[in-house]
Length: 152
Image (tube, rainbow, N blue to C red; front, side, top):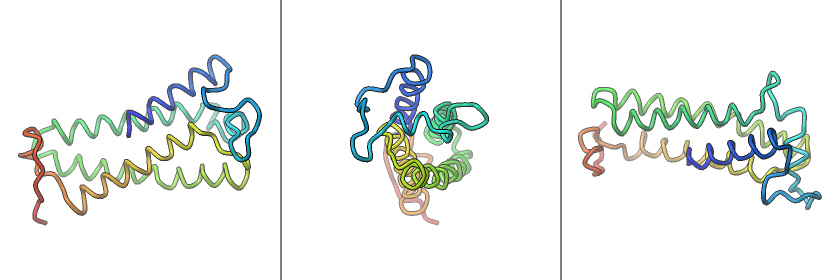
């Protein structure tokens, strides 16, 4: 899902912020709750003058790096990498809830691409939570592509 998040955030960054066009699939006129322009042009679409899409790209890139460490890193780093990946993804959850609240209760509009990014963060958190607390990967089996339950 991190790749989906990077793709969506990069697309919005280029199309909307650089080319000043509405992303594909965003209606040019508001359609019910869907109004990408209202969300992307709101004062909440930037932090310290930097588009939130840049922060999203950085977030997903760090996630991919941590996934790389979990899958291809040294076996003794496995548990630490997995735990830090959980922590990193956990940081995204309250931010997503805050941004969704802004869209629904303050801006009164939803951006399709923002929703894709939010979904990617929440899905990533769910997946890593599952592997960390329910059915973790054995570091010795990761490279072989096999899953086994780690006894806690």
